[in-house]
Structure formats: C-alpha cells, structure tokens
Length: 389
Image 1 (cartoon, helix red, strand yellow):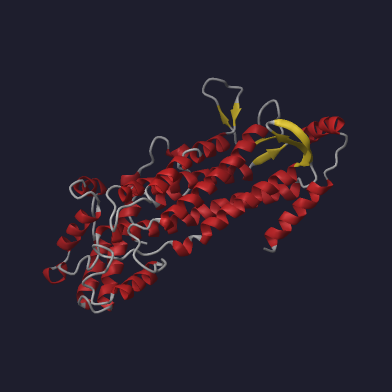
Image 2: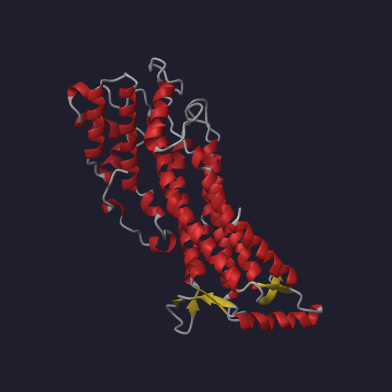
C-alpha cells in the first residue's frame, strides 16, 4: 500500500459520530490517490512483463508512481476539465518520467480502468476493518448469549410484551445476524476484480496480450481477474452495495434494540459508556447505539443510488458511473461506522437481569407460565453452530 499523509483528509465536523472506525481512512482522498497510482504502477509492470513496453520504462513509471506527490485539491480542480481525476493524474505522471518512458504511461488503459480498479482495491482494504468490527460485535453478542442464556425476559412484538423468552436468545439472534452479514461481505472478496478493457472494452492495440496484462495486474494488486472487462456491467458494484446495506441494516437493528431496552420505562440494559445531554444533566444517552443508527439510516439511499447506476449505456456510461464514486465511498464509511459503534455498544453493554426477570414474571402471570426451555436450547444450538460451522 502506497503511504500517504492524511493532511487533506482531516476529520469533518460529523465524522466523530458518523464515520467511526478505520474504514474512513481506508477510502479517504489520499487513499484514493494512492490507489490510482498503485494501479498505474501495476499496469506498467504488467505491460512490461508482456513485452508491450520496455522493461526500463516499466520500472521508471512504477518508481514515479511511488514518488509522485500531487496535492489532492489541485488534482480535483483539474479533473473538472475531463470529468474524472485520472486524466490530470496521468498527465502529471507523464511529466514525472523521462522522454523515453512518457509514451508508455497508461498503456492500453482508459480512465475507467484505473478508477474502477482503484475502487476495488480500496473496497478490499476497507472490508478488513469493517469485517473485524462485525466479527467483534458478533463475538460480544456471543458472550452475552452465553452469560444470559437462561435469563428470562419479555419478548416484545409490535413493541408490546408478548411471551417470555431469554436475553440469551435475543443476544444469540444478534450474533447470528452479525455473523451472516460478515459472511456475505467476505464472500464478495473474490468478486472485487481488476478492470482493464481500454477505450471501448475490447482491449484494442494490445497485440492479444490484454488478458495476460489483466491477470498480472490482478496478481500484483491482490484482486480477482474478471472474465471480461465490466465497464458497464455493474453487477459486482451492486452486489457489494447490497451486502453493505444489509450489514448496515443489521447493525441498525441491534442498535435499535439496545435503545429500546435502555428506555427508562424498560431499563433492562444500558450502555456502559453513555453520553450526557447538553440540556438535561440527569439524562444519559445511548450514544453508541444512537450513532450506529444515524450511520445505518444513511445506507438505504446510498444503496439505491448504486442500484440505479446499473443502467448504463452501451460500452461507457454517461454519468451513471460518475455517480458511483462518492456513493460507494460513503456507503463503506457509514456501514463501517455502524459496525464499529455496535461493536462498542455490545462490548460494554450492562445487562439488568433482575429487571428482565421481573418483567418476564409479570408477563408469565398473564400468559400462564414462564416456559423458556426451548429458548435456552436454541442458544446452545446457535453457539455450537458458530463454534463448529
């Protein structure tokens, strides 16, 4: 990974609340710029290995990619003339190498090849901390399921007490949902593929070496090799969007449950590190859960934008592709934030088993008993399945 300073990516006013965790840094402007240059370097090495450019030129270009220092704000301003940042970046890269290597920069590629591949590279890197937080949240839920496996509580449907259950089963439900969300995202890693199709996706002018170059780039960057260039086939972006949206929704569901359990009128659980109110000193808010919900609720709109962007014209989209860039980044960030906050909330959750029991016993008098044996058994099954999938 090419190192970049985060000077152009200082935290925004709302990032402490809605961009928690490590994902934001993995997809920040400097990370994007670094990924674009990594892709250009991989392309130079691959085209040199394929004999399409001189080996010395490939080395020189790769070194220039590693050493080039481009202010993000300057590149952003210049991108307005071409509609994407790759064009001015390639111009600077050509200026950074000697005359003998200049014509070989960006060999056989179009701007979308570089930007799409960089997006896949960043998504792959962003999934690492995101998955770690989802798994960590699931681990914390598993701990709660074990500790409170047979702790009776009132199950609630339509926000009203329904029948007795156990808090262990509720926590086990959180665990399974979080694990499954992580599994869906992890399964998409092999779908994060290099893009290399050239001007119109037919790899013209590459002497039949296009597939070899794409394969070499994939190996170099740790990405998958696509069967064909996917310039206007955005299925993999949609799959990623759907899995991210589902993960954000799962985190939001857990957070919503915690906020409801923490209500004064319920008081069955609360966060271990609640936050205060600016107006009411007596009030302790479920900050982690509220923040997780704030992030998660942004996800559906972002997912919808990426789904809408699937309808693209012929071999190159007129605007739909451009709509993906910030949308995918924002979706990764809000999902990562929701996962990080929920992990924090579950890790430090304070459970009030006596209050739970009291409510369950009150309910048992109405429904005719406190039978939670099946719920206890279901927790055993869920924990066993997790330990021995």
